[in-house]
Length: 127
Image (tube, rainbow, N blue to C red; front, side, top):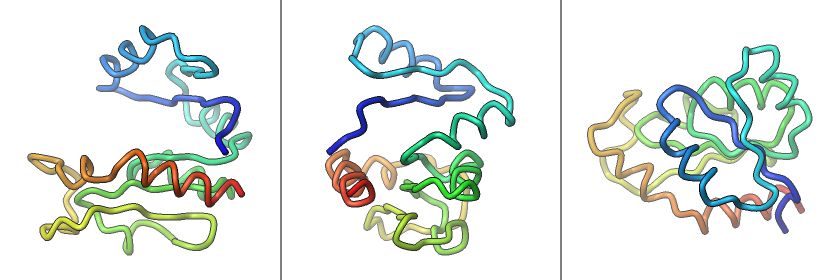
């Protein structure tokens, strides 16, 4: 069971990915332009769920009681996310994580989180 509409929020450095998605012309995908924090919070307030890496947007969504799925690579989900029935952290089994750095040279720990595992958690949270 998936939401009827998917809203993509993005930031600096995501331009190439957003362009790729735009070119696919996928139905019910809405790409939001750059927002200030007040506009961002307003959009998040209407969300059913947010899937995001470990960043400020996820923290704002969680503060607004929006269900969240946090994708954690090198950062420590135990230190940076309150986990409960509405807020789930997904990680990879990489032996090097978590090492509490905001950047990783290879980022294979994020790449190891499959789209299927994210979709499964979305289903669980939206039921």
